[in-house]
Image 1 (cartoon, rainbow over the protein chains, first blue to last red):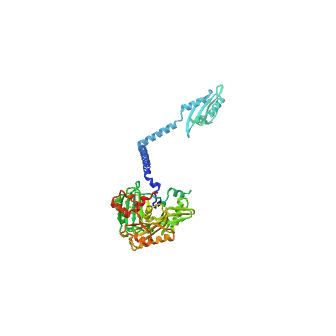
Image 2: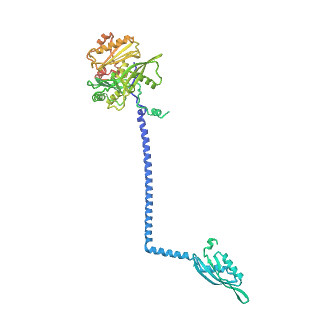
Length: 195
Length: 321
């Protein structure tokens, strides 16, 4: 009688072919391992380069900071402070040197007609501006009024006012003499402000 | 398909499904009184080496649901010595278990599912009523005996996993799991002459138990195993009475006349039982022996061992599936 019984449990395919799969699985694993090693090595090198660059930047920053501190210390020294004060003083002087008598004379000369003559000119600071006092002599009232009108229209002057006005007869023609007037001189500011 | 089903398909649990017969290259026959081993040449169907070591009484006590190896180290030593003698070959290993450790039954169904898993579940369920342990803990194997109309007849075997684990644990020098596990009597069945329509009775007396199988044609109609009170085959006539009982059952219940009565006694007895059994049953008793063609290359000493202990090995070689 043939017997086909068997109480043994046959190994599963996974167990039966484990050895056959072992070699490709090992190769695959080894390949993966090599890939990981190469990737890790490359990443490590990049990390080292980045770290080196960061260290260099840090060193540079430290150097600059040190230089800044040295400069600050240097600036805090009395000699440097004195120099700073001098520079500030010079800068203030330069800032203050916006008024020029030559410029004022040129501006007035542009306004004075032929029939009017400037007989007196005085100036005094008034805040940031300069108060100018003219004394003019004109051949006629029309000429004086024309000058004053031009003066008021001029962008260099403001707040024009006549202090006193009187006519003096000299010879056959009536001549307006010694008309004092004041105005504020806007030296160097009138062009920028558009006045 | 849910996750559980997918997981069950991809990662099946340690299989409960048994395989089909495979002729191993090395076989260990583990019985209460001895451990025999043989190296088989599968291509030429020859026994190349055979060895046997006796086991002290109580070292192996075959039971279907309790621990079998009372003295594990003794059994291990015997296995080691046998394997050293025959060589473990590094190939397939087969184990023949004591008959009492395996439950065997003839099952009849009206129909059997075509799907193997479903059929196995049905066989397991039916075997459950015959087992002294939960059916879920058994590994089951079955063989179709006959299929006629509305009747399917199976020869089914069940072995408790924990019992088998014990035997596997004793195989310390073997790396792979056994590829063949059978009760020893099943290995003797191929030695019965084939093509006889009348009933044949096989009596296997082995180390304190007697197994009786009634074979009709290519089928089995009766299988019974009984532990003997006396551990020797000579005993006090217990073996003779048991065989007489089986023969009577065969006549009365199976309505079958016995043509041949074959007996295999292991270890060999000093006082032959054939005459006593013949007188008790009224049958001509024949000693089960192989053709001898499987032992042509064995030295005389090992040939004698084969005749006395290794008929199961000859039966495996004779089993041409």
